[in-house]
Length: 319
Picture 1 (cartoon, helix red, strand yellow):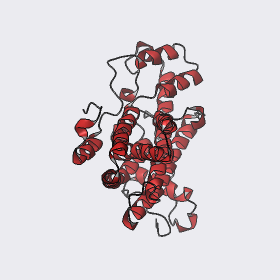
Picture 2 (cartoon, helix red, strand yellow):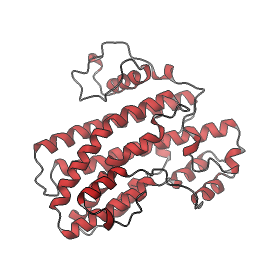
Picture 3 (cartoon, one colour):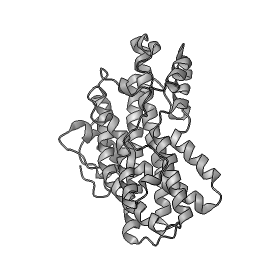
């Protein structure tokens, strides 16, 4: 396969048939079919119906009696929906949290004087994010086809991180505060998304197409995290004390949202499935004080804040 006319495709292992299939499908979706010289591997043919779509240990109700008593079909439906919701979470964050933040940087909306090097880097990252969206869209589509369940993205609510970001920007007093809030949420999402993707990328229990999708995405994000970290340091140095305080507070808001299980989504899913006892199961999981956060690794943000000398000034319990 040649990618001469493409923006840079995600790095992948040509000897891995699943990774090759994901990237080739991605290339086709970009609309450059003439440059694809080899027959396209078929994602559907690589789908393993015997594999789970999502790991049980990431379900917030995995140890609930109601879930443990369910039949196999109901469990499979919940895991399939969990994968659709996982992809929607990634896509919404990429499109509505990360790219708007990068766009602020690309147009120097915070008057930081960032030059061409950063502008080119963030524009390339924004192109990458479009590819990531396509990868996760393809992964959800093949799951719907192979499982035979509709599971439409638009049946689910906006994801929690996006809802929190919108609430915070609405509360902002002026356009500059809105820009700082948008930038803070982008910083957390882009530096920390690898921790979210790592939850699935090497889990052998689940669907190989799902693992390959997440693994390919994650390779780009290690580079993006470095870009976001560098930019955050430069931007922070230019902010006045009040703006710095706002930025740090919004980092905490974003980490809190990003780390949490989205119970509104789960309430919607069990309602769609008309699952007897489902709402009570989700309520129990939501109010279980033993329940750990879904994403617990904010080492990248902690490192950034230590570098800035502000980790101790933040109202966040670093793990």
